[in-house]
Image 1 (tube, protein in one colour):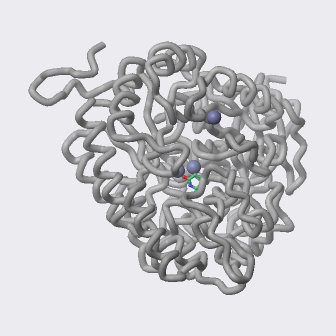
Image 2 (cartoon, helix red, strand yellow):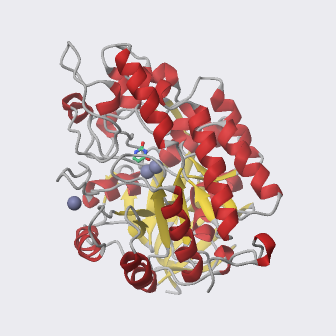
Length: 492
Ligand code: DUC
Ligand code: ZN
Ligand code: ZN
Ligand code: ZN
């Protein structure tokens, strides 16, 4: 046989075009695309189906340890089963750093844990304590091992950086050719609002959104971009939830700043109506940035359509509803003390921030985006894999249907319909915030490096079959060469 596998007669959707062809796989990579390919050892009749690259979810929290000992409830096995079942064949998750501690030991043990994954994976390194030793010795060593992106938080008590620390991280990333991703919200503004809300006796999940309105995100987005511009270091703004923050990105891009924006399905489909659900059900929609007013969703879609936001990630978090009710406080992703209420449930500020979505990311975007006519198939491919591959140094390897790329593929039945139910999902979490959503267009088969990993909902991949994706230097994150007054404070 010329090929190990031939997918025959599908409608192929790449980042650029839609066309009918056969696709041949050999040794885990795409070997040929064209009509009338010779037979493969295995054949899939894909007439009537759409074939896209496998998804790359560049922002998800999987089995991430917190300093207090808490671990997100998802494991790499359940998390990657969920990823594959939803069409995502690779993901980038986070190595934590705890203040007052070096990175190396945490990174090593987390990397060992990740070896159980069934999807391919890479890491962003979180920086919470940028000491000279971390910046001059540890981070260069991580980058040399292929961890070529850093994540910083401008809020969350145990995680956030001051502006001065953020500048040092930006300068370090520039010297090393790494991308910096940023969680943009104003820490002091949120703390001030939380104290006032609690003092007024306003403690429901809905008040999570009141504590961090769009202006809080917009200010931090503006500041992050300004500081990145000062250093001349490219950044990606994570999880943009509203037009006001997207507008900051669009303005900066227009003046030539290298800044990119990501959003997530929750900001396109959910709203404060979900946070306001009775019986504490609103806790299932607590994430940060917070969900916005219902009418904001159309504006975020518009920012996707105009290209300001060019990646849709899940920001998947492994916090169950049952855990949220107990307000564990050790998640790391919360702000403020655990103020208990008369009914024994936690106040909004003690609910761990984050929703599960690694399996639903692509189906929800396919249904609400492609099937609903908001985006076309190439845009869907760019948003779910190709743009992230480009931005994070995996171009040509992931997010592509061209010969030479890894044979990560998803077959979609555009006519299939299903009502989303947590009982059908593969993650270890006890809810989905999309329970009851009607989906049109579903993945039927996921292929990871040439092997059928999921067929009709059954996960066939084996734990440990995922591979670490080391990322080398690439051009997109080169600085622009423009610094104020021609004085380069970051040096080389
Ligand atoms: N936002 C969340 O909702 N969860 C995890 C981290 C984050 O920034
Ligand atoms: Zn400590
Ligand atoms: Zn974040
Ligand atoms: Zn996140």
